[in-house]
Length: 530
Image 1 (cartoon, rainbow, N blue to C red):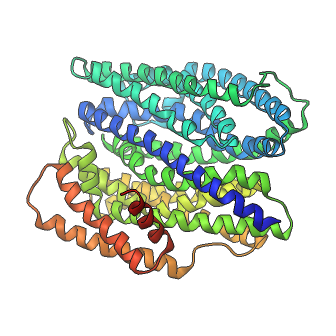
Image 2 (image 1 turned 120 degrees about the vertical axis):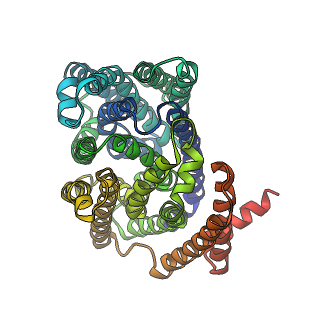
Image 3 (image 1 turned 90 degrees about the horizontal axis):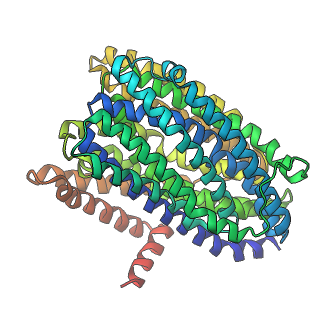
């Protein structure tokens, strides 16, 4: 029975991955537009830009701690399993109880966070002083309620994903980005940078509300028996709560890593905090598009079908291996593009207004450091989702702790002493932070794979498949680099088209020639649309 089940649900999962990727692409494109408009008005090396980006990360701690990751791992497996068995009333009861509990906890934390902001700033950005620190405190207090709304938006995402409604949940952040873009356009030309940062923070809160509001009607339609009540007597709610704790701790451990990065970046010269924020949005694009889309689409199906017998393990292996191959096909060329052609990409997206070409080169260095762990981060998401489908939230926690310890030690060494030893400017320590995180990401992913293989059987990418992808990516980068050095000085967007275009064409042509199935299927899809 298992193979048949796998066969019938695989098309739905692939469609789900497409919808997730489409939603993420829309939201990320909106995020890139927001970043470009932000760069136009704020530039890179301004205290207001650093203050806003540092402030933006602090309430995001709350969002990331309670939001999509923790809820996906604890709530979706239980809720999706009830939906798959047709127990809709019980499923709605669980969703209402989890939503009510989440709202209560987040409301308390938002209030505490607003009053404790000066302490948080002293802990996370000790390098900020004077007016820069005061502006950061003001921005954090404004942003905290918006972060609470985004956490509730993540609860909506859990309900929608369990019903295989992926597009809306992942496209909803477009509204949040649109509100911030509108704020920048409306007030950017006539406002000083500190005042513009404050207005942008209020725009972010408004966008958070709209992002939540567009999802609520669909959630209520899918869950007609939904009632918000603190129902802790339900066995299903107890399971969600019990599974939430280790994932919450795991997310907290990851956030400790982000806290350490922010702390170290605040000790670097002006521009490091904003440079990391700019590179992060680009770096997380392939992680979200390819890693998150596959993992998010697979989790509800895995949760509804996974069991401990041989058929269940075989189903998980097939799903996991297919997902790993799909991820690698897109992520490996992304990593090579960031490493070899990052300046072209950054200039095309951000070089405008106060953002100069030298700033684009700086962000490229940070982005190149991020490319070290790009493949590991995306593969690790799918491995973690497999553990969550098996209702095992503790194993990923153990390995997350190891990753954070490595990130802390290597991050300090790479960011502070290493630039001095190499005789380069201290500001380049930001690239050391991203590369050290990549190394730690590889350790975590390999530990996840090794432990899961011992549990369900061998999984992973064939060495020959990976070698073919890297060969095609390197060949494409070599041709693109030749184009880059041969063309005259052109506007950044025009140069990007002339350079990145051949890179993509050569990569796809070589993967087709090397008989990689994903490439052949992509060519067929492109041909069918003509």
